[in-house]
Image (cartoon, rainbow, N blue to C red; front, side, top):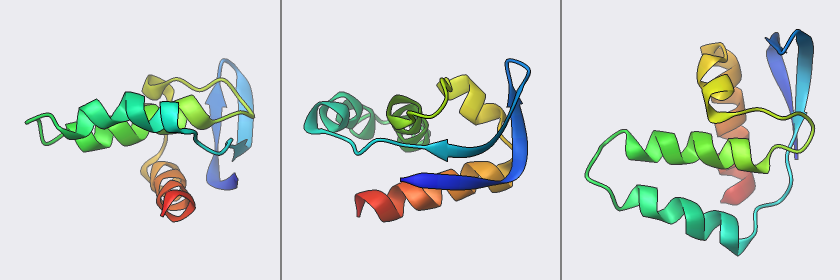
Length: 86
């Protein structure tokens, strides 16, 4: 899956305009599922951010990098991620 960013992001001095993700496998989902069962309402968002970080293949992007993305880019990634998964 590829997601074109609405606005280019800079990570480690490199401008990124598009991200490429691999298809998740059961192990990815199993690792993240623990987050969904927590009482913290932020856990779902953290889980989705972690999943995006784990699945991106075009650039090394940490969850903290995703958290720094402009809101339009973050939502573009999450929207595509949800469409891709469901």
